[in-house]
Each structure stands twice: as C-alpha cells, then as structure tokens.
Length: 329
Length: 265
Image 1 (cartoon, one colour):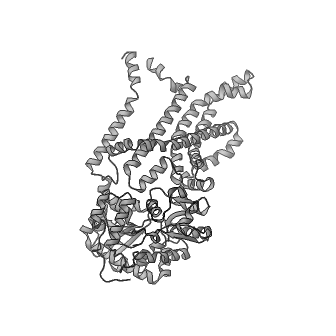
Image 2 (cartoon, rainbow over the protein chains, first blue to last red):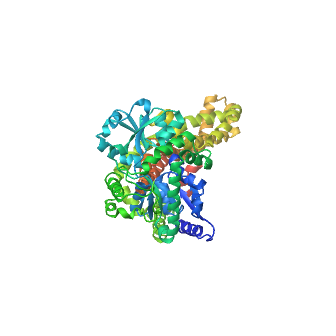
Image 3 (spheres, each protein chain N blue to C red):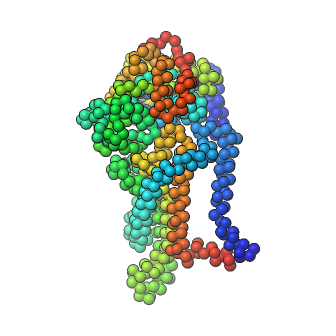
C-alpha cells in the first residue's frame, strides 16, 4: 500500500508541467562531506538548471538506506556505494547504476599520524574499530588476505559510525576502517590532528565505490531525464575539479553547518584521484570500464556476501548508455 | 457455566494471545502477497521462521549478553528507583528539588547520549547496562512515588497510635501498600530495559542482539533482522513473565492477583 502511494506520489512529481524544470531528488549516501562537492557546485552554478533539472539534494543515512529509498522511489537518484547497491539488487531491488564516479575504492584503515601505523604489518597488536555489516567491514577480510594479516593479529571493537570515530579520537582504538576523504577529515575536524590512511587500493583491493543509481523504471519511462541528469552531473564534476575551493565552499553555502572549509576542501582533493580506476585508464567522469565492474563483482561474490549468480550478469548492475559523449577529464 | 468450565477457560487463557499472534502473522503474510511487497522491504513470515530455525544457536548465544545487560540494568533501576521514590514521597523538600529535574532528565532522548557512554566507559558491558538503567529507572520512580503517597493516612495514624517505630511503619504499612504500584512500575521498567540494552549494543558492542541487528541491516539480511527482533521480544516477554510470577508470590493479597476468587464467586 505504502509502496503504491509512493509510486503514485513519484509519478505525480515526475509528471509536472512540461515547461517547468523537472524536480529531481538526489539522496546522498551520508551526511554531507567533501566528496559531495560536485553536486552542490553544479546546483549553485546552475549546471543542473541548464539541463532543465531542479535538483533537491538530501543528506542520507548510509548507502543501504538510500538504495532502499531509491528502490521505493522516494528519491529519483541516489549517490551510493555501488557494491552496496549490488547487494540490494540481487535481493530484488529494482535499481541500476547510471554512472560510477569513484572507480578506486576510498576504503582505508586509518589512525593518527603520531601512532605511526603506515603499513599493514603495523596493525599487528593494535585495536581496530569497525561497524559490523558495513561495506568496509565486509572487505576487511579481503584486505587481510592480500596483506597477510590474520584476525588474531589485532583486537576488534565494533560500534556504529559515531562510535567508531569516537573510539579513535579518544584512544580506545588505534585505527578505524573508513573512507580516506571522510572519517579522516572528521577526526581532523574534531582534534586538529592529522590521520594516516593505509589505503585498501594500494594492496590490490579492486572495487568501485560511489556512483549514481536510479530506479530501473525511471530509465525505461524517462530516459531523457536520466540523460540530462548524467550530463549535468558530469559537467558539474569537471567544473568542480577545476575550482576545488569554490566547490568546497558551495557545500557550506548550501549547509552553513556542513563542516569546516579547510577539511571540506582537503576531503574533496582526496576524492579527485579516486575518479580514475587503479590503472588510471578512466577517460571521463562516471564512465566505468567493464573490467573494473567485473573485478568488483568478483570481489563482492567472494567477500561481500554477493550471490554468485551476480558474476553472470555484471551488466545488469550498471549502464554507461546515458552518459554524455566526449566530456573527458 | 459451572466452576469447572471457568477453570478450563482459565487454563486455556495463554492460548488467546497465541491465537491473536497467529492471526497477525497470517495478516502479515497476506499483506505481502496482496500488495506484492518485495522481500528487500519486508521479509515473508516463512523466511523469518526459517531463519529463526537455522540461526537459532547463533541467536541464542547472542541473546545471552543482551539478557544479562537487561537484567543488570533493571536491577539497578529497582535498586536506585525505589529508594529515590521513598525520599521523594517522604519529604516535600526533596520532592520539590528532585522531581522536576527527574522529569526534565527523562525528556532527554537516551539514544542521543548513548554514544557518549562508549566514549566514557569503553566497549564492555557497562554502556549497555547504563543505557538499560536509564530507560528503566523513570517508570519505577513514578510508580513507586505514587504507591508510597497513596498509603491511607488513617492507617499511618493507627500505626503511630500504636507506637510503631518509623522502621516498623515502613515495614508493616507503607511498603506493603506501595508494593502493587512498585510492581507495575517494575513491569514497565523491564520491557524498557530490553530496549535500553539493545540501544547500548547498537552504538558500540562486539556481541548481543543489537550487534546482530546492525550487521543484518547493513547486508540487507532482513529475515535475520526480523528473527533477531523476535528473539528480543521473547527476552522481553520472558522477563516480564518472571516478574509477574514474583509479583503473585509477593502480593497474593492484592486485588489484581485475586482473579481466581472473583471468577469463582
């Protein structure tokens, strides 16, 4: 019943007068941080409006929740961890990625620089803070396998996202599993101290990360809207990369409480290298290679609890068909 | 309707909630089929039952720390709640200072401060116990204050006239009179303590039902999540029932415990 009502509400939303801009709700993966700069920048600079899109950016509470919201059509688009979306999709959620922005995983184990934990061996004998069930905790065994760490080499403490941060800040844990441009900046905001990330991607963990997802229905019923959304998003990324400070500032312009300008800027700077895949082959924002997606699915099947049938239909998870032509980095 | 028939009805009383439960589960299943609710939004009852069956050993072992934290938190609520209520009911001064602050503190959402418990007390059992205590404390105080205050003044006068000491008055008049109200507060408290323990586990814990809930939500394992919720409800019901038995034993004379007599009359 709720679903029917939601569907009706969405249909009503989408069927606005033709002349007016289409109202599009984009739900982020999490509360705002530096990684989200391009969307705020594009909205501020009128890049979405130029494509006839009235963009409403909403903060999220985790990629899983946002994926469910998009599947239920509460939001037109979601900016989520694509591997997380895959797990929902194999369970029947009707969603598809229309572009993968982060083509190298931002996952990392990080602790204060002063703790001098700079390579996987340094984690031995230390305390690691994780959130059970999140994407990092699922890839953590893979990282261990790639680096020769064993579960018995360190101690684990678990808690929610806030607890994980608090644990490192207050010294109850030495490192946490997080994103290089997210938690590291939050810790720096809180303590003023620098954080050193041991990046999963440096140790052979090949996995895509954040991308734009949308209900499969919408792709079929309104391909034009999807095309305009991807064009505006691509242009926004390209423009934001050229004006890193301005892009970070646009987050604050939209959310005065969105953080500190220095760490938002640094967070966005740390995000930009992740737009390209580990081989550096990526040519255009959101345009992901088949190999990268296949590798991601393979890793997810082995470690992320993804149903093995997924290996056979990698292409059902994403499409590059709605991306603009010739907008290279 | 003979007395034996009444007794039979009484003996089958436990069946009634079970019948309602079955009806609710059937309704749940029908709703899923009728409205075609996909399993990633709400799981089917059959899947939940299957998961409950398969994961039972894991759920049971995770239920242990949650139950322990609940009981410890509850005992703390009782141990602090009843004396505080005695103070409040016994002295207008204490009441005027303490009671408003207590109500004020109760309006603070515990979930908002629960993460801080982990910061202050680490990842052990203490944050869970404290959060169970905080949720369970208030109902005990409110009910017990009500209970102590509703002792008939005539009874107190009588006791004083018979030169009973303060302790004797408390032991023979005030406390027994307040017990029914205290028990109703304790019963509310124990169900809230379960919630408190899970909140504590949610924000930071390496084990327990809250841990299972968080892990299963993260990986879209909705049947596991619902199975964990069922286990949680079972913990609540069992603890409530134990308290009910203790109540029957402690205040057999009270009107609420005299159903047998009323039915037979």
